[in-house]
Amino acid sequence: MKKRHFILTTAAVALGALALPADAAPKKETLNIFCWSEYIPQEVIDGFTKKFNVKVNVENYASNEEMLAKLAGGAKYDLIQPSEYAIEEMIKDGKLEELNAENLPNLKNIDPKFTKMPHDPDGKFSVAWMVGSVGIVVNTKKVTDPIKGYADVFQDKYKKRIVTLDDNREIVTWALASLGIGANDVTPENLAKAREVLTKWIPLIKLYDSDSPKTAFLNGDVDLGIVWSGEAAILHTKKKGIFQYVLPVEGAHQFVDSLAIPKGAKSKELAEKFINYILEPAVSAKISDEFPYTNPNLEARKLLKKEQLDNPASYPPGEPKLETFKAIPKELSSDIDKLVTDLKNASGTKKKK
Image 1 (spheres, one colour):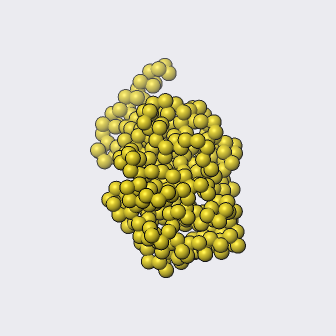
Image 2 (cartoon, rainbow, N blue to C red; image 1 turned 90 degrees about the vertical axis):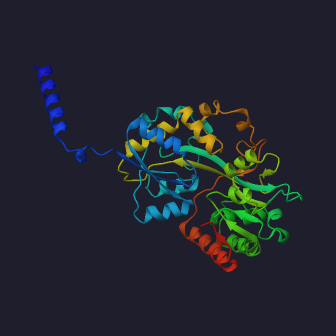
């Protein structure tokens, strides 16, 4: 009897579906992603939408601060891609959903050293996407003097031949490093010291570009720059022997970009499906193919070519001096933005449009 009832019900539903007009078909579930520019291959998005029969909307930002400001303004997303210090801040403010580990069996593929890091010590709120560094790119055909650190880049003779990231905290960190001050030792007194350095440095910069700084190199518009390691890795591959990647002797920022779910996300389970999907080795390897940062997925690394693993920008040799960013008080973050913005405006240097 129970089986008969099921058959009749199914038939009724099927007949009802045939009677529905075409525009009344159920809408696909939608995943809204807010992520860094040039960081998720379209092939990965297409693979996910096909596998789960869903729709994905992608919107981009150029800095963690831009992402945080938009979320604070009420924007709604299901999945974001914050860096380590932004995750720490959002956890502290209760702005992230706790992940359901049962929905993420592929977490086992992540290198243990990129799990339960200081910004998310219990590993409850974020999953590493890619890891990288911020370092110096040198066109060795145009710049013949040795470039070892930040002070070597910002010299008068290189005026308007330099591209840098359009990221205020990064820029301040370089000035602090040149003074022997740690990346996270941000105080009003140290910001005053950084201002003295940046007053000289910022007028030398030709272009700010966090999206695709490699383009200015390939077009011959600049000869030096401080950029994301993934951008440097692409330059190394495209023009081997010409573009050199240098991790500054003063120390460099190691960023850990992760996936996280904002508090109140409408499609939390779908967001977790996406996280688990990108942790599949073959999918994660596709991300490395297009955006060659350090892949924290050990199983995916087994699928990479030798030349990918040998790329010094993707997988720096030796033991470079690297430091992750920690969250800082909001008032100091505002002070950083004002400091750099004022100097940028005074110099007249434009950011990429």
